[in-house]
Amino acid sequence: MLLVLCVDLDDDLGRKTGVPTPVVGRNDVEHAAVSLAEADPEDSDVNVLFEGVHLHDRYSDDEDVVVAAVTGVDRGDVAANRAVGREVDEVLASLSPTDPVRAVVVTDGAQDESVVPVIRSRVPIEALKRVVVRQAQDLESMYYTLKQVMNDPETRGTILVPLGILLLIYPLAVLADVLGLPGAVLGVSSAAVGLYALFRGLGLERVADDAVNRLRDGLYTGRVTLITYVVAAALLVIGGVEGAARLDAVRAHADGALAPSTVVAALTYGAVRWFAAAGLTTSLGQVTDEYLADRFRWRYLNAPFYVLSIAAVLYTLSGFFLEYVTLTELAAVLTAGTLVSVLSTLALAVVESWRATPEGS
Image 1 (tube, rainbow, N blue to C red):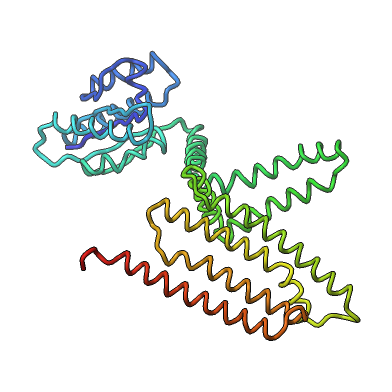
Image 2 (image 1 turned 180 degrees about the vertical axis):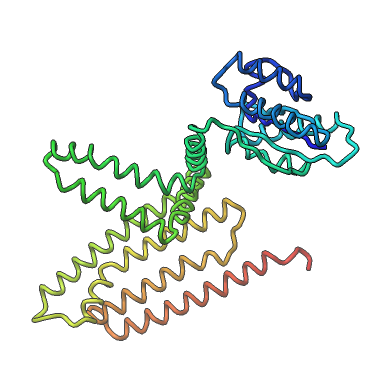
């Protein structure tokens, strides 16, 4: 048996005529087509229904043919496909064929053809017939393709973002000309397109999205590290300024050019205290967040001790190169820094082991 299925994915038939679906039988389908044509002569589904009747008449002399019209819903692709699947099941249940059923699916365009896998899962499809007005076939296919592109977030971002930037160049150029900044528009637009191309080419958009998501989650959950990172960034800037100021002071008291080791020592001597404060701030913020999240481990407290020890060693070592510190003081600080690091590691490991041991064992 051959089943001719006329598919109306967005249910124009039911919405415009009130005809209950599925519609099974030649006369009923023809009546439904006439009703839809009277309600909306421009609806392309009218052609689909008449084509179904035409195929029924063409093949009915050679074999048993049943024509039916099935519809979806006007809410979206998934819901519409499910509705079509249910109506196809109803049509198949109403048949009592002596031979296996094969289907010819009739649609009015590419959008309705998205339901073909749903129909194929229920009955073998022998042919697919698209019925559209000849003048509109290419236009409809192009429209459906553009609609699919616009619904894809990745493709939409790839096409529309550069296009949007390019379209903004002219109004920005007019505004810049009014403000007396004609060269700024070209530079900003070129930088925006270049950064976008760089991000897409290197795949950094996912990294940026992850960073934004982490920042948003941190704001919503009240993470302390957000504040400590901002404070640490400010301290790093201050440290850089202090390092440059120390270098200028050393140059002012030096005769001739400075050796590379002296330049590094001066920068380190001026900046290391502020860098240490930044490291201490971020480590304490991280420890606080881990404690609030019930993930605290005693070994995490090693970080502040390590930061202080490393900072003390670098500060004293750079001071030694600048002749601010004696060799004896350098040796004492190196020894103290090593002892603090080792003892803090051992002490915290013992505390963590003791805390992890069950009582009475």
